[in-house]
Image (cartoon, rainbow, N blue to C red; front, side, top):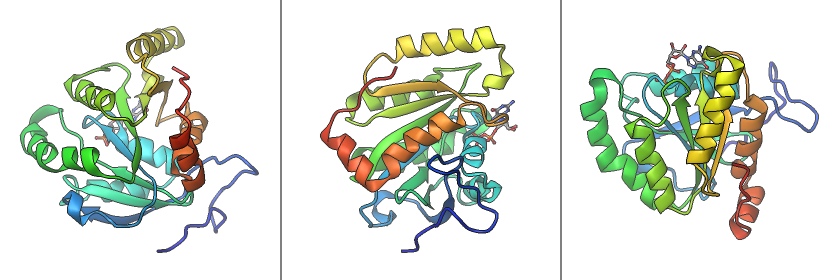
Length: 226
Ligand code: GDP
């Protein structure tokens, strides 16, 4: 297993505070059984097609190549694994629920992604990317209901916040927090375009993906900041 360093050429790493997560594509897996075997914490990132999941990954890692990897023909229906400099892995899961692509991707979900979510021991948390202008679409609600049945925390990014004025952003954020009042959920504003909310998202991911921190939060139930 290769260890990713934060301080490489062209890589920015602030003293004490990260302003990006260094990540590199590891592998794709079509099914749970083909997922990498290492016992490293994994955070799965999900979102309806077009919610901006790829752009969010780009913004958090400042690596355009990364999310493009997941969009390579043949990979869009796979679980895509990325090593990170934090130690744990980001797993980009296929989304569905937009326009015409729904049927095959729904099939993939029902057969493989649900199995990954239900059985993957390394999975410590999920991140749900929603379009702030159209939150809580059926796909999002399905993921939220799954989270309520599981023991895992979920961090929700209300992405494309730049599309709304400040007042409307705050109102949507308050409404989403009211709706996701269970202690497992945290919700924030995000803009993959402007970088709004990046520090907060990176902080959450750092807590989950750093193996020692991740184990500690298992022992102590996470506090709600919703
Ligand atoms: P994915 O299908 O969920 O991976 O979505 P993409 O990352 O491909 O984004 C879908 C579209 O939304 C693209 O045209 C992006 O440029 C746009 N987009 C993504 N995030 C943002 C954002 O925060 N603000 C704005 N204005 N556009 C965004």
